[in-house]
Length: 374
Image (tube, rainbow, N blue to C red; front, side, top):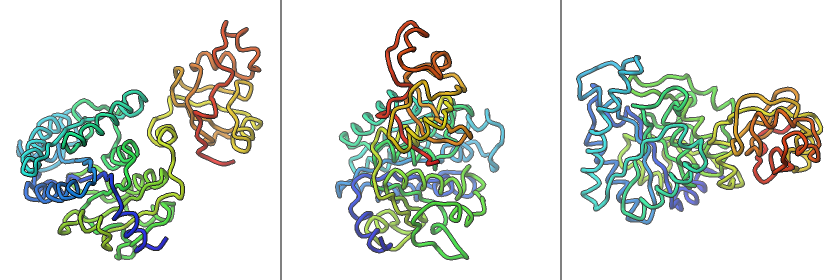
């Protein structure tokens, strides 16, 4: 699909949009919040709401705001200090959002998430239900990572990744990442459209990031790949451009637009493949590889040769080939301990090994998503 057609048909038709705003956009040179720019962003979101478009914001800026409040000029490296700055700055950030949204009869609704919130299927669904209800209550969800309590094991890493997961969660039509550059650049020129986020596209970036922010173009491309693989449109654009959201979603040739996959992935499959982190690995034999990929079959215990990690029934596991390459992901029917006891056994022998056989399959085909082809 040509870029102009994609912009006219997909961006103009969007009814559910996730907008990620980075620290460099929301703060001034010294780290203090740029309230004027936040006000301009809010005005555009309010206009989109008036047009019937649901908007969810993923907002950085808490640490930068905290730095501005306490007078720190350089982003600290100490984790505890960063967490303290996030706690200090988050309240100020939300006060600014609420003040501006109230002018348009809207409210700012804060959600602070950690990685474990989306790894857990029930909590993931609860978040989705909360976001849907907030839209009905004239509240604009403003999501940030819960930096004051997050440790390495439960971090998203970057708000770019968080925004992609939020877009997948709410089944957004478009993810827009607003930054301080005009889009993805190649030889100093903006790339108008990217059909597939592959290694050649990643090779275009140099990994630079701002002094206040934690991400870079590489993490933005990772977010673009997640969203387009799920079947939605994504875009990177300059948040300093006047009325950028309104103009981009009106189909103007601004920023870089990323083409979605031809088929939109079902919501459950998206969570299994792209959101939930695998709790362990299940290695299978060549016969299971063939059955899963070519035959669209369930994974039976007889095809399992090794189990790595600790997981419980219902967790997402990574299914790997005899060579250790990822083949699929799925919701496992047995814990790691149980699966270790029944690996290599026929289904008729499960009860003998465990004392009961609630499932014939280790992973049922309805709960399995192929991620690689051998």
